[in-house]
Amino acid sequence: MKPATRKTLLPLAAGLLGGLLLSSAWATATEPQDPMDGPGKEHGLLKEMAGKFDVVTELRFTPDADPFPIAGTSDSKVILGGRFLLTRSVTGSGPDATESLNIMGYDRLQGMYTLISMDTKGTQMNYFSGRRGRDGSIALSDLTRTVSVVMDWDDEDRMEQTIYLPSGKGKETFPFARSVMTEKPKDDSKPADKKKK
Image 1 (cartoon, rainbow, N blue to C red):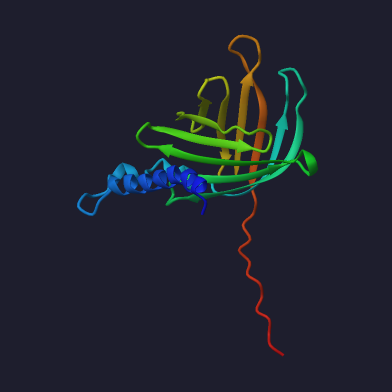
Image 2 (image 1 turned 180 degrees about the horizontal axis):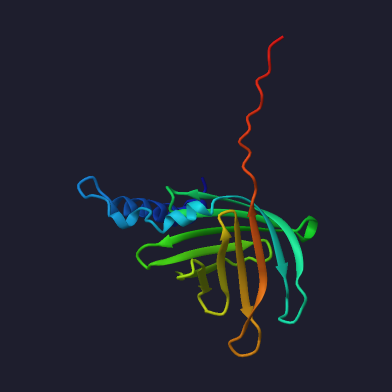
């Protein structure tokens, strides 16, 4: 290995080692794990949101534009011991298709749901946080409080998610994207055993 390469990798290795040491210092064998470290009752909602979905999204780029539908699919599963929900989605087809990746969780220390979202239409990651309302919906806002995401459920197999953007008229917003996600039927059938001849 060349000396220049070693110099480049040294800070990375030191950072990784420091991270490992720091993470192992959080919980030692002599101290019990903090109950706030694990999933709580709010994380049950993430488990309920897991599944495979057909998605129909209506997009509008201006407040007065007619929405146009785009079909897609979404696959969500709980990860890291039930702490987070990982969702991979594809909407549209061909060169206009958009792939997205979302990670949703519940921060027990802050008492808020959190969402990190990224897609193939940009290079930024979007971060949202917010609370669940009395009606059961979850309202999340970005760090600037200009973009919001509202999640609501009609029944246990159907969810609606709406992204609101600024309309350009003061603090007014408009529904930029409204997605209706319907869970695909679970295929519980098993292939029939083939008889040997």
